[in-house]
Amino acid sequence: MSATDTTATEPTRRDFLYVATGMAGVVGVGAVTWPFIDQMRPDASTLALATIEVDVSSLQPGMSLTAKWRGRPVFIRNRTPEEIEAAKAVSLDELKDPVARNANIAGDAPATDLDRSAGEGKENWIVMVGVCTHLGCVPLGQQGDFGGWFCPCHGSHYDTAGRVRKGPAPENLAIPTFQFVSDTTIRIG
Image (cartoon, rainbow, N blue to C red):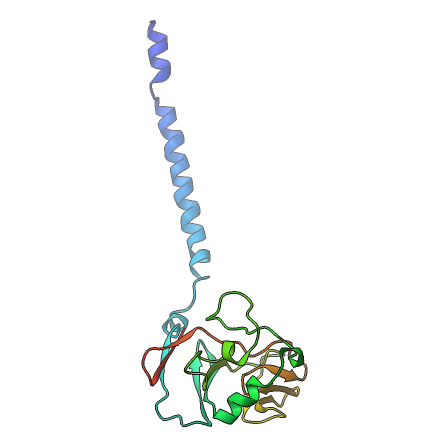
């Protein structure tokens, strides 16, 4: 082996400068882009409202309340047996949007009353995001042609299961992810 062969494989000062300059460039690009990436994260106040717990012990059948979750109203209603029977009696063929829109159910389940309620044994409870699916208005409760919710801005009517029955709204009121953590407390989110 000659002396020129061994020196060609050893790192030189020029190689070190290339690596150091490249690393400085990577750090510089990271320092410039981090503020842009960081500003895309949700605000701390939004993260704080990611999950809420609502005490529903005071809601008698036929009563409802509105809670605020992620900056939007959420309707919680303790339905009467008559309201449940009226919602069960509706055929899926009569619905404008036959999809449940329930975050608790994977996939596109049919918009039956049971799939939109809190489930077997708690069919009287319904929890929905209170934003009209037409243009984002807030519907009024226990009003309209079907005894559920009515959006006076554009005339959308929802039944007691939050399914759009009449008007320009294209979809049912959305059902957020929720669960009962006790007999009187619902966790939303």
